[in-house]
Amino acid sequence: MKSPDRAEHVGSLLRPPELLQARAAFTENSLDLDGLREIEDRAILDALEKQSAAGLDRITDGEFRRGSWLTDMADAVEGFVRDRVVLDWKGPGGGPEVSSANAVGAKLRKTRHLTEHEVPLLLKSSRQPFKVTLPAPSNFVVCSYRPGLTEKVYATRAELLLDLTAIIREEVRWLVSQGVTYIQFDAPYYTHYLDPQHRAQMQAEGRDPDQELAQGIAGDNTALKDVPRDRVTVAAHICRGNSRSRWFTEGGYDMIAERLFGSLDVDRFLLEFDDDRSGGFEPLRFVPAGKTVVLGLVTTKDAKLESQDDLRRRIHEAARYVPLERLALSPQCGFASIAAGNLLSIDQQWRKLELVADTARKVWA
Image 1 (tube, rainbow, N blue to C red):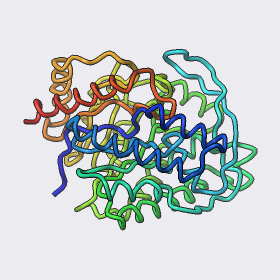
Image 2 (spheres, rainbow, N blue to C red):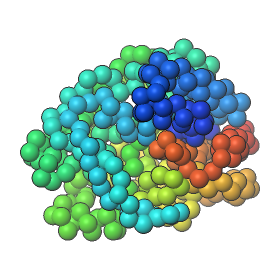
Image 3 (cartoon, rainbow, N blue to C red):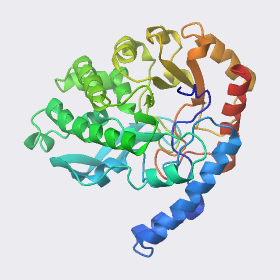
Image 4 (tube, rainbow, N blue to C red):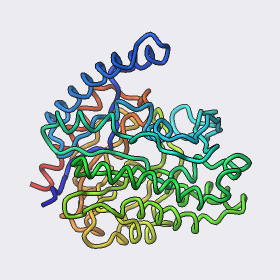
């Protein structure tokens, strides 16, 4: 029987200084891959122990082997080319910023499993249930399709989505074959379809946001088609961007809730509800029976520790729309969606995770 997993976290953890130094040395060719892997292994094993000690029901490797939450895709798949985009971040130090990105510039071809360097240590060393995170195929239709470049290879976004879906579907099959029992799609680009500014930009480009949302959901569903649901949990984390404590999109789930919650074929939705930019709980009324909502009430974007009384009150507010037995608790997003991480300390991160676990024990005791 599947565990209810009342206390979990999204996936990424703040990298310890030794690991950040090692990755920089590897980039500068002063540390070889074996040396990097040894340091990564030590950091991951320590993180596994600390997550267990914090009381979490489901743990991860912290995404310590990744440059960011989605870089495994371009690392394992040929066809991506380096690109630059201007992103309008909100929050601390926000504003337009030129960022590096990976655009699709050639036919996609998978050269290895995305997570083949991550899963073996988890299978060998984790003494409790763990999850493996993957970027949802639908992400790259938004963030990696460049008119004038990608359309030379893929005439439409829908055509690109077919290859993306096939790549992730094969990865999911492999994870299941290895014995992984919880697979999470990270899908922040769904929130582009609820943000009025981003919807207007799509429409100005002659795109239909609602049609693209439907196509993205269909593609992600296809990638999950082979999962044996009696023994493997699938989840989706829907966020609004997370880089150095900043965010990218704003707005409640209202605009997409009925279609997203009713159509995306996952067991658990990990949703942001840590401040006003995420809206209220009312859209949860569209979550079908049998699906769990993991309430992201504890923010990873600043160091202030939430009041447990406030967390418990908000959990019971959400229970007006989804029964308490189908709710769980987590931080709203990862602590380090990029390796540099958010603006809080590692100790503050662990206190937040301990708060999640302690609150969950008291609510669902």
